Image (cartoon, rainbow, N blue to C red; front, top):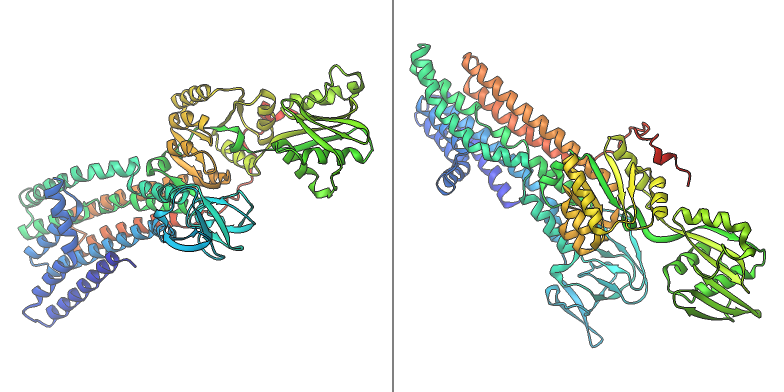
Length: 639
């Protein structure tokens, strides 16, 4: 519990003790009992009254704190000391709970700050020197013992290790790291000790960016919270003006006694105060932002979380966003049973650093075929690889063979053209100018892409893919994940124009991307979402960041936004209804001041607690109904 929370609850307990002591003293006819009630009012209401007065003189605005102070003093003026003390106690308790709620909903930033490493073991002339993280420079070497935090962003220099990246991605499963792998500040080394090479200064690390984003989001309110905050000053002025008018109306118009008229005015001052309305939005929004941060979803402002609930259209970049960003072998055709074909293929690919070569090696890794070593391989720029083995000349590559003009491959021509039409990259292996094998590779969709698209389509949200890749490749991915539409061969400015047009049509649209070429589109969308493994530029211009590029977190963030909208609506309707009910019962002379206080402050506590429900992880949806757009033409395309 923080220091401010302890002070708030201590003041509440002292106020309660003095109020009960005053009640006992009044029952036993002790003459100084009013002073006990006044002490309770002073101690319980000091903090809020002080804040209200400071705001009045510094910002020239009125808030609910002053209304409560005036109501308590008004009750004492007509001799209702106990009611004034009770009002102060419950108002003080409400304030303490709101303090607790705010601190609890912002605890994620405190937890992140606590995880932020402050020292590191710098490698200097073979020895380890403990230095402040802020003193590290790019290219410095840092030693990270087993079980320790990674103090700064860098790359693994040697060996392998296992890293707990829960602080970054929200996922508890450790990530295996090999030489050259990226390491992030704030993560935990679960494997063997290692040395990393620093790639970013301490204030530029991914962890530092996360802390900055969460801090900014908690300071920037959504439109609803800002609106309620703006009207609070006007609302309080109206109440302050209405109370004396109503007292005069009760006294002169309805011929009530002055004591009863003044009493009803004080009750009105309490129940008309918008405490619950003011607390309807901000605690809930802070709780939702903290919930997202815990899951690796960073909102730059509560406004974007609020907008997300109104989403009508969403556009995605392809490579690295909807797809894995790495080609995979999806088709293999061997035109001979000679086992040397695969051996030669692996021997040639083993000597290449091309991404396609890595994909081929990975595809055959499970078969544990030992590649040949007694052959020489030469790389021909823009053409492929060439090797000599067993008195034969072997050629491997995208341009290593021409199936259209070579009569020996006519039987395979239709299949090869079909693979190419699907956007797949086809590489050929020829022996002495005769085709012996070919493979097709493509960048496959991420594992959660189809489920994520189905979720948005089921809600009637339009889904589109925007890519600079060719039509065939785009069509393959679009059909695979079930998109409503796709646009291929686009330049960055084309993506931007499309996003602008969708924003004009739908008002609230989203763009999801990860590259520098996506930055203009991200900046022009109503909500720009950067995937966490993307470029710094994309993260800078976006409104949301999804850490570790997990598409399932897009659906989680939307569900979180919908729940926030539902809870805020519940809170606003409930708080306004309670105010109306209490006013009506007060004018009917049914409501007394203690019940008015309980009804008013109780509603405030309830809306705060209702908002805190957003701190809890969302349950997985159980609705398995088929998506609305299952029959769209794009989904009928045969790959």
